[in-house]
Length: 438
Image (tube, rainbow, N blue to C red):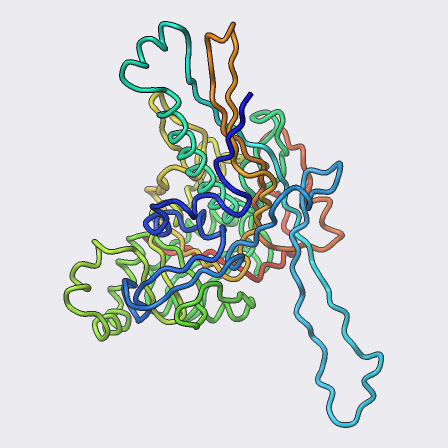
C-alpha cells in the first residue's frame, strides 16, 4: 500500500510553522532535532526578544540517526562517550616519544523497539457515506495521529530521564509480548533538598536508586527551593562533572526544568527577586505569567513545564512492585491509560514533593533508527481502511557501568516492568534530579 514519509531523515517537527511556540512547550522533543536558535532576552530573569539563546545540535540529547548503528542480531545500539584525557603535564626537555595517552570510549546500551499507532479511516460503506458529507476522514486522521505520536515521543524522553529507558523497551513482556523488558534504573544522581548547605544524596552517590530508597527520602520531607538550593546544585554539578548544555550569548548554562510552583518558590527568595527587579522593566515583570516560560538566573536557564517536572508518588498502585513512581495515569474517553509520562504529574497528597531536573551536555541518548512514517491498509473487500503511524527508536540516559555489571544492569526479558533491584556504580556526568518541596 502507499507509504507517506511524514518527516525527513534530519528531523521531525523543526520545519513546522509553529516550531517557535512548540520549542517552549515540548523542548525535550524538539531540542534533539538539530541546531535551534531563537531570539530572546538573555539577562537575568525572563527571556524574551533581545538576545540569542542556542540549543546546539546534539548537545542535551545525543542522536544516532538510522539503522546503520544497529548490529545484526541485536536489539540495541551502543551510545558512545569519549573519556576525558587524564595525563600529567610534561614539562621541560622530556622525551615525549611513546608517552601519548590512548583515547578511550565508554558505551551505553540503548535498546530499541518499534512503536505503532492506528486510526480508522473507513469502517464501512455507510460510515463513508455519512462522514464524507462533512469531513474526509483521512484529512482529519493524519494530523491527529501525528500529534499523538509527537505527544507520546515527548513523554518517552521524560520517561528515559527518570527511568533510564523509554517505555517502549522497559515494559514487561506480559504487557508487551514483543517488547524488550529491560529493568528500569532510577537516576544515580538523585538528591534531596532539606535546607542544609549541601544537597542530601538519595541512597549512595553515583549508584542507581531503588524505589525503597526514594520512598525513604520523600517520606523524610523536603524544603522549598531558594537561591541556596541553586548554589548547592551548581556545586554538585561541578563535583559530578556535569557539563553545561545550552548557550546564551556564547556563555554555557545548565538547563533546569521546573514547574510553576518551584519557580514561584524561587522568586520568593530575596536574592533572586532583587536580581530580577534590577534587570526587568516593570512591564515585563508584571506580565511574567503571560510570556514564554524561559528564565535565567546564575548558571541556570529555567524551563517551566508542568509535565516534565514531576512528583514521586509513594507506594502508587500499578507502579513496579507497587512501591512508587514518577509516572502518572492519563485519561482517555473511557478511563485510565497505563501509567506513563504523558499525563499531568500526580502529587502524593501525604508526602508533597516535586523535582528540579538538571540537563547538561549529553543527558540523553536517542537511537533514531527509523523516522516516523505512515501506512494505509485496506481490508474486508476494501470496505474498511486504517491508517498507521510507526517509528523504531530507543531513548536512554547517557550513563555507563562496569563491564562486570552489564549482565545484571542490561538484563532483558522481564515478564513485568521492574526496577533494578540491586545498586551498582553508574557513571553519569550529564544530568541530575533534585527533590524539593512543592
